[in-house]
View: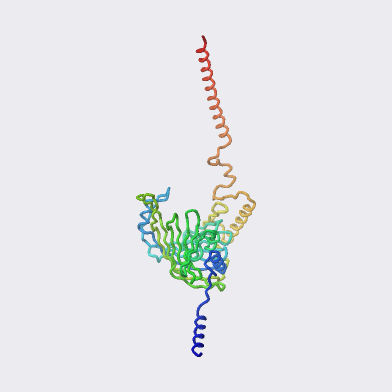
Length: 394
């Protein structure tokens, strides 16, 4: 009896040491979607700093030089030379801030600095080295292997959104603690993700396939365990990515591109914080006086002189408000592509569209040609009839 009690006590103690597993109730697509959406909604803000060191492969660089994109002439530097970029990002709701540092070949000396922000309605870019800035109407896209891209997103959309959009065709294959989730992103493009159930369905690897061939791959090696509003979140802190470039093998009976590695990147996340409050000031760039600023709302550069930071900000917000009110009224927006104003556009001939006098002259010329052809046909017909009568006369 004494031995049974001891065995029971040991079993209970062991059970209390096992952390509760927070995972989907089953391996169905609907269950995975529900879990991922609950996890994503638990994260209200994220801050992190990461370092990316990447290079072009020798084979990929040679292939890119031989097969440049149509209409482009590429001047490529030496391959295999590592390039370092540091990123510091803050996101809270729809607001976003991304600071990027470029380094020289020694990977230690800073060569350039770019700051981008989105406050929910207005985007800004500032380059301190050139004292230049830009006001943008659309939110910027981080075109690099960000933490979100390694954790929650595929091609700018969350994994939960992809699965919900493709839940009728998405496939899930279970192998122990790993799940392989496959879904179609568009015609000819498929995503294949590996989820780890022991890490709260964190993505450990994913491939993007085009025409059945891998064109992009990302592998996560180390994770940091975080807790957001009581929900377990595993954030990758070391991962790598490879981008491929197609090479057509003409020796095959049915030519099919071989995917050659073009770039390889290693990313290290040095710090990460979830759900810490972030001041709204972090998402607004206040351009220093004297900055040369291009305003997409106006379609022109703002005057560099006589504008202080507060005056610049007031002018930008007033113009953004006017532009959006015009948009709401379904009126054609001015400077949609930083082009001429409506008045100047009306004064200048539009390419491909003829002016009224030119159109009248062209129509008259065509009418004269048609009339001449009719007259010639009529004269030839009269002549033919006259000859026919003469030949038939006794």
